[in-house]
Length: 256
Image (cartoon, rainbow, N blue to C red; front, side, top):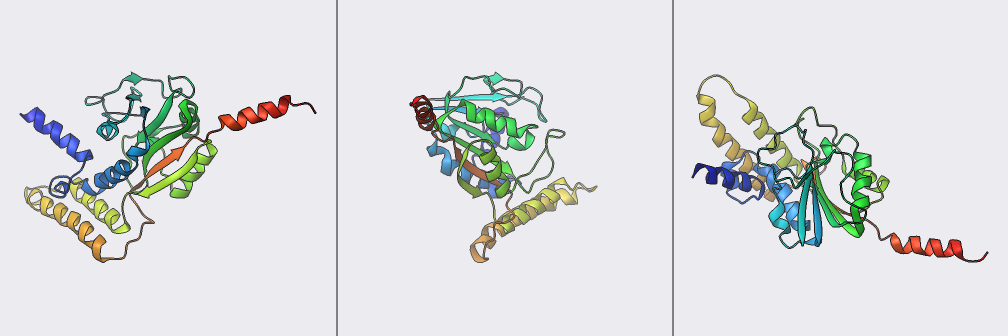
């Protein structure tokens, strides 16, 4: 019974519902991620690779895919007790041939990749022409999985990263408003604060619930700004460059 309850809690921490306001201190963060990923998930189909998959928390959103494989590295900032990794790899070369996948997903992974420029090129290599890349990356978030936490990227940095890697930016969603970001940061501070005595444990939960409601209600009545989101969910595409390459080869062979 306890194991089933833990499994339910892990699942609902990612696949969020409205009652997470009362249960999870990370509800604002997780609901923003879930909403963005859920919006774009139908854009990917066929054979999908989950890069840095961990426990594959969003795999059920891609149940329509023909296949859903996950790869990860063995040495990370977290253990693999709950991981569902199909293939471990060296973190450098994706162990699949060129143009193998119709889609690649990577959720909260790219901030942990030391050589991100190379990784984006590798993802492009294993994507088929017109294949999609769906990923999320934090902006306002504390250091985590240390020492494997290397970067934060703005929306402009994301677009530049994709352009440099030969991918085409398609859509970008911010996972929270400025008000929601501020509420989540206060919640994190409250959860991390552990003064002596039981009084703090008693008032901590009402404070967390109150801040979750503040974000929910505040976003309905206050004009929203989105220049300080917790992070981004991004949809990109590998351009169909095969046709242009064939034209170039034909032009090269044409008599001068």
